[in-house]
Image (cartoon, rainbow, N blue to C red; front, side, top):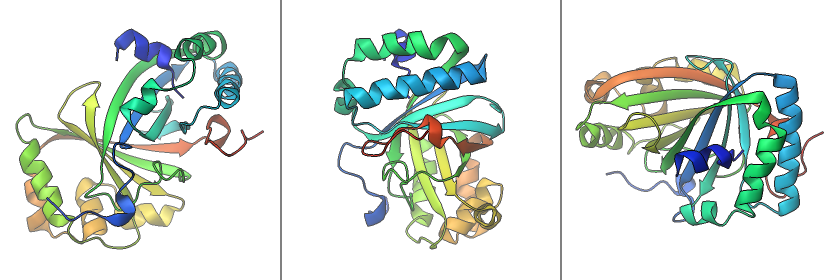
Length: 249
C-alpha cells in the first residue's frame, strides 16, 4: 500500500497491442518492499490501514504479495499500478496517510525500498495489475542491463514482440527510480503451475514461450544483460484493496 511515509523520506519499435494499452498517462507503478518484524501484528495493522484508505475513498488499487522464492524471500511487497504521477499527487490526505501507516503497520516492519516503474506496453501481452485483475502468483524477472545498452536491448525485445503467442500473461516495466538503472522487470501472471511450465525458468525460455522467439533473436537481448534475478510472489488478497470491492474478511 502506499507506505508513502517512506516515499516522503526518499522523495520522491513494435506495433501497439490493444489489450496492453492502458489510458495515456496511466502507466506508473510504485512498489514498496519491507522486512516484517512481527507478521501477525503487521498484517493486523496493515488491514486497519487499508480500511483508512477505503474510508477516504482512495481511487488507487493497492496490491500485496509475499515473496516466496528468490533474493528477497520472506519480504512483503505492496504496489499500486495503472496510475499517473498526477494520480499519486491527488491521493486523499497524504499527510494523514503517512500518519496512519506510522501508527498501524510501520512499527512491525522495516522499510527496504521504494521503486517507481513505468509500464512498457509494446512487448506486454497482458496488463493484469493495470486492469485490476491480479493473479494468484507472479513470477518476476528483474533484469539489469549494461549501461548504454538499453537501446539495443529494447530494439531486440521490440523486434521479437511483433509476434505474440497466446497464453502467457507477460507485463514489462522500465525502472524510473530506486536502485540501479537501466533495469527492467517482467511479471508473469499465473494461476497454475502449468503456466510456469510453459514459460520456463529463464528469460530465454520466457521469450521463446511468449513470442515464439528463436535463439538467434534471443541472443542480442542476452548480450545487453548484466544480470537477472528471479522471484516468485504469492498474492495476498486480504492485504489488498481494489476500489469498488470490499476489503476481504
